[in-house]
Length: 166
Image 1: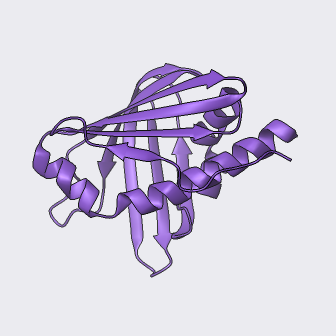
Image 2: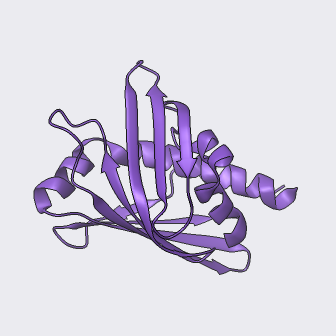
């Protein structure tokens, strides 16, 4: 049985307009990539323990769109969408990310750069999020996104380990 880890993502703020997250998974890169990009698998991790994913749409090609929607345990809906700018499976992808729940419309798009490297069957995921200002970066951090991200990435690892063992 493969060991999994919990809550081990490291979040740093390298500049006023960046959020950097690094997380190691005890699974091969190909399996982590699948969990991050296949709708049926995204439905199983994206909400963490905080709700149920009701939509996971992925058109995984440059110029293609994605959209995830969850109903939180408290009953409210949370939705994000974006467009793929770069895909080099299973190593890199870049996409925009827009939060649909702002009181005055959608948020400004952030740009998320995913890099997956594998060493001895373990995968390190690095996600660099670039936003338009320090205020936007600080607002994202203030939402408590780190807790949900940790829960989600714990499930990513469990699913990737499950896929690797199949």
